[in-house]
Length: 256
Image: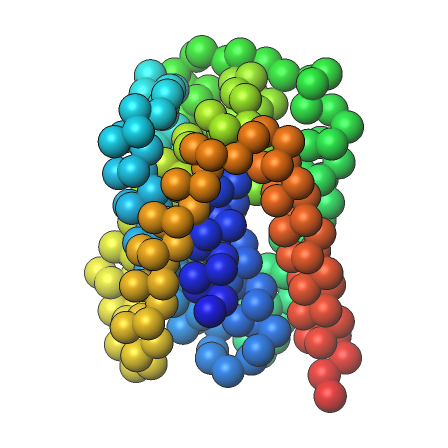
């Protein structure tokens, strides 16, 4: 249910699903952090493939000139983020410390996302066209999404709106494209480094179909909803994720 609901919301708003799946699974505490990252990445990748396919069928406007450079950067960033996550996991004494770092950073980023989306979106925008800057932007977004294990949706939306002056629906579609490349890179890197060994991934038999179904439903609703309705979904979901992230951070600081 978490995967299905997250994928529907993620495909509607461009949030990507992982930003919901990762904090909620942290909250439930039934899987190790490494397993949660893999479960989230597979589910979000499944959702993004279906969602992108649907948007191509719908002939949704995708900024391919920008998207190609962003995708290249996101693919590299996915590798960097996964490397940083692995190094941090090996450096700290307890996995709870990593969960705290991920959730604390996520909460701070989402608060900034919420403020920008509702206060400055119409006032602060650029139209970057330099390929190198676009690639670097993709690297940064891919690194953040892979390290945090969230797919990067909210951060992508803000970056696409701020740096490329994309409208909400356009930003949502291009965000899904970024999510696909960053999560594909993350999973390829994990597989090549033997990161799947010893992980209990049986839940994928349920989560991947849920991600696929969520991608179908969410991309269909994306075409039907108005911008104001999408913004409401985006804001409400972001507030809930911030609350969950705060709870997760407090649980790490003050374990029962």
